[in-house]
Length: 123
Image (tube, rainbow, N blue to C red):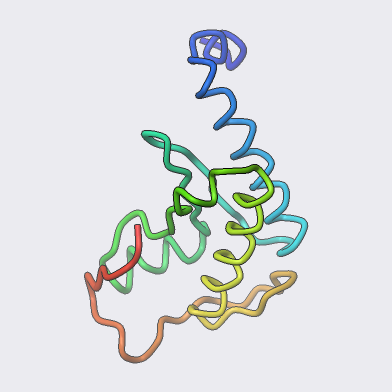
């Protein structure tokens, strides 16, 4: 099935989530060039992941699907959602000792006090 046919099968609210996910992905790339962001939605929640951090968390921290969920209040407007995603993306980069801005090939590292399967506050 092609993407166009899949989009035709989506509910109207799902296409607006897809549009918002695409806009968030575009804005993350604009603010943090060369970083690989994954923006998806599930059950009305928008989820943001960084591909390299996600892989690092899976291997080193034994945490699959690492990312963050945009708070429901962020979804009250497109502008709020984009702003929350940019702020959250930057915080995620810093948490894993990566600089905000363009990715220059540095690898993520977890804070020293993190333990495998530590889940508090993350998606």
